[in-house]
Image 1 (cartoon, rainbow, N blue to C red):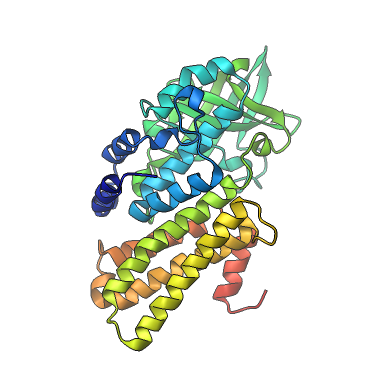
Image 2 (image 1 turned 180 degrees about the vertical axis):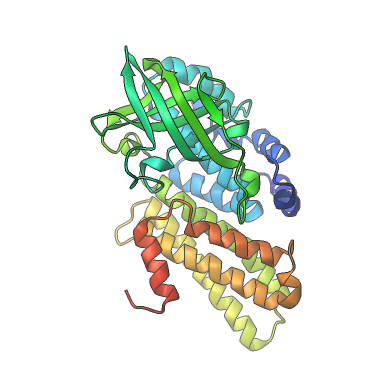
Amino acid sequence: MIPVTTLTELAGWRPDLEPAGQWPSRQMARLAEAGVFGWLVPRRWEGSELDEAALLAGYLELSDACLTSAFILTQFNAAVQKLVTCEQAALQAAWLPRLARGECFTTVGISHLTTSRSRGPGPAVTAHADGTGFRLSGQIPWVTGATAAQLIVVGATVPNGQQLLAAIEATDAGVKIASPQQFLALTASQTGSIELQEVAVRAEQIVAGPAPEVLKVGSRSGTGSLSTSALALGAARSTLRSVRVELPQTPSQAAVISQLAEEGRLLEQALFAASREESGAWSAEQIRLRANSYVSRLAQCFIAAAKGTGFVSGHPAERAVREAMFFYVWSCPQSVVLGNLQELACVQP
């Protein structure tokens, strides 16, 4: 999927990402050279048009090498998917070839339509009709790579409660990009809020809706819900290798490693079975719950094996613990949160 030399470089640069907290431009350049930004773009627009299994395999590889880069790519691909499935030919022709070549960057601001701020007193972003288009106002809480993006696919709610998605440019009048947040991990993803003040959106910029639950319109079955689990399992691959190095190979500890490795193998197997919609496959939420548990338990194993040195800021074990916590907050359905809480409380569901 990705050249080994590129993955090796990304893994080598990983320790420097968090202290700097800056946008990983050289990582993005390497991904562009490897054609990674064209994974979801159809061939007629210079992409490679990967199927579900290949996409998940790519996420596993990339998150093993660099979780921050993999997270950024998922947000890029979320925007690309909406562009690919929309019916705006001019918009597609103008952006998709450039995006596939890595000449520009796109991302999404849509979390407020689902798990983030969806239960507030009113919509986070509203859309009011303006001729044949709309005007968007409000605040989008989480947008990854907004400072690097030229195009952003954003969500808004119209007065009747339906939702729409629109492709806006970062330089459009009324778009104000806030400074990125400082996170427990993945700060280099440059994730922060965007304020929209009467941003004009023409009809040809609407990529989906207005419709109820607009994020389900034209979505690729399985990928959106499984990609987060793929990143967790890719990060777990990296942590498992480190645990192998840290733990002395006594018979009892070798048995522990063997059991952890088998758990990871079975989870990856379940991931691909779900993507193929096989009969009897686990649901996406079941896989996510187990992947969250697995990556966090591995991180604890790593810091226990590394002992005091692993508790020092900047050590790979310390970073693994922080990165594992990311999966408890990013696009985590309430049923998964409850399942993880039950596990932590030793309560049988």
